[in-house]
Length: 278
Image (cartoon, rainbow, N blue to C red):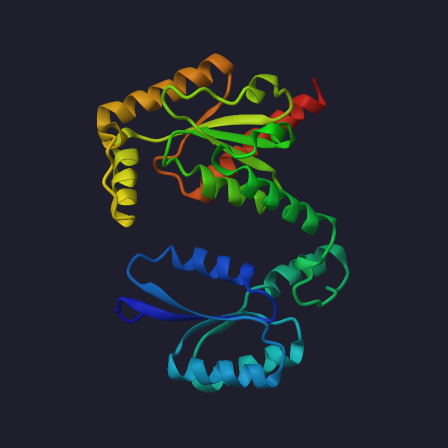
């Protein structure tokens, strides 16, 4: 590859492109020497759409990844990419080929089939509505309906982690741990929900809090909010609380939102298994 600080990455889908975007970003993240400049094209379902995409590829040559179910459209894109001398790959073809070999059946060739308005889809929407209405300690009266309750001091990524879980169909509520502020009474009565505490290093928390204050042009009158020793005590209190209640703790200092959510899902799965097989 030519030495450069960036390369063009064209992601072409006949649906929403979510799968393709995730694959492209996962691959691009493995290369520190160059940064991908993404060109995302969704709902590409006609020859006219492909012609417009090809014009952009010609103007900014680079890697082409696509998920086009219609064979004629995929063939047309491949042909034009060969003419332009740019590499193109159908991300789903190797996977569908493997499935076909194992199952002995061809795919249904439905664009965006994973986004069908089925029970699973509405379960995710229901979970998202629940999570948004139970963010940051809101609406604690019906907290018993939560699948997962996330506890943590300010700036431990409770909200984005909860939303990520909701997109996986998990009803997640999050409650801030504030010094001298008691937890909602309902927490004492919860028996089915999985409760987990999030912590991070004092240095990391202070850094994020300082950036937060700068981003909103605010000066905290409460100096303990960004005082390292005070933050360390907040974290220690979280540890003591979770130890007393038998709640697991996840350190998010070096974890992405996705990694934190994956850890929670693993623990939640074990929790559900214990409930189902006491």
